[in-house]
Amino acid sequence: MATLGLSAADKDAVEAFRKDIVEPSMTKLVILDFWAEWCGPCKALAPVLEKVAADYADKGVLLAKIDVDANQFIAGQFQVRSIPTVYAMFQGQLVADLTNARTESQLRANLDQILRQIPVQSDAADQAAELEPLLAMAEDVLAGGDAERALSIFEQIGDMAPDNAQAAAGRARALIALGRLDEAGAVLDALPGDAAASPEVERARAALGIAQEAPSGADAGELDALRARAAGGDMDARYELAGALMGSDREGAAQTLLAMIAEDREWNEGAARQRLLKLFEAVGLEDPWVSAQRRKLSAILFG
Image (cartoon, rainbow, N blue to C red; front, side, top):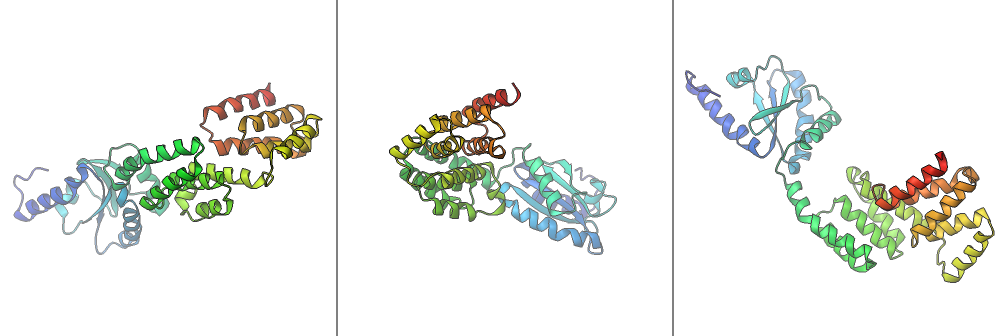
């Protein structure tokens, strides 16, 4: 903003704007709220802006309130014609007009979209970078079959980031592998709303559902008996065998269910297909193995 020909008060306002808003916007996303004391809609919107800004503070979002009566020059520079007017600024440039986002959900949706597109520095991003190698190590340990050690690592990560969805989901999957199903359920149930709806947690819930459905205490002899019954074509036995295998032999479970679907896709109201989809969800829909099995399923259903 040029300052030539400005009054001393306007120069002070420009300098304060640079210091309090433009400079922080070099690394943060700044929400500019143009308001006035006499403006009723401004007062109605203020709690929404303040709550969302507080919730997004660790994501690098700041709220700057600009009284248009006290800062007429600044408001004029932004061509504010009515209030409330709400903009988002990053690196000294306006990146979005948030004026029409009058509800908390609308504002959050707008901010989420903006934050995906710009390199904002934030505590959350810094923490994510710090946790990433620890999470990868824990996942590798769990995949290697050492559920006890994996559980310990996930618990340490949870102490650092209690609401981290990936850590909580990993902890739950480690507990499932150890047969501690009630504890796994408690971990997932304790998560807040946003984390509870994450793909990682949904995957852990699917894995828990599979473990809860599996026959308890099934040993090698019981599995052999199930296989013998299934070999005779008994659909109930094949379905039960697939359930028993889902926690330990996903390939065997998938092949059993695919064969059932190929033989009678409508059996028991499509139960085999539903169980197969639950297995896909537990493994992870982006997993290459799941993609291969889904192609097999499609070939059966639409071939």
